[in-house]
Amino acid sequence: MLQFNKTYFTFTVLLFLVETLIALFVHDQLIRPYFGDVLIVILIYCFLKSFLNFSVWTTAIIVFCFSFFVEFTQYLDLIGKLGLEHSGIAKAILGNSFSYLDLFAYATGILVVLIFEKIYSKNPY
Image (tube, rainbow, N blue to C red; front, side, top):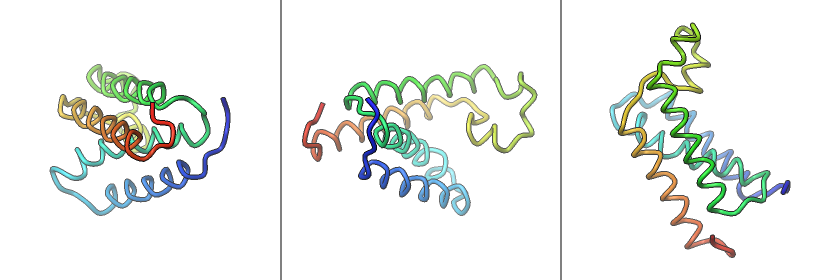
């Protein structure tokens, strides 16, 4: 179950750097909010695959459910209910506003993962 995969870890680091650059330098209405959400689920997927030997589908479903759960906490205003609305870290991790378009971005990111795995993986699905 546990195993280190340097390829997925390399993708994790690269995606983290891209996400950081987007967060620091891109302040638009398309790339930062939506492309960033597509990339974040890919980043989480790669992070899990860096250390866990789960199947493509299992990992994709875990990440998909996790991303929807986080968005659901935004719908419930969990940050506000916990009194963390002024915490930059809490906002960065949990987000601070619900959007159906975010759910679409997460689904798109998982679809990209599944397509990529189907095309490039030695053992797809």
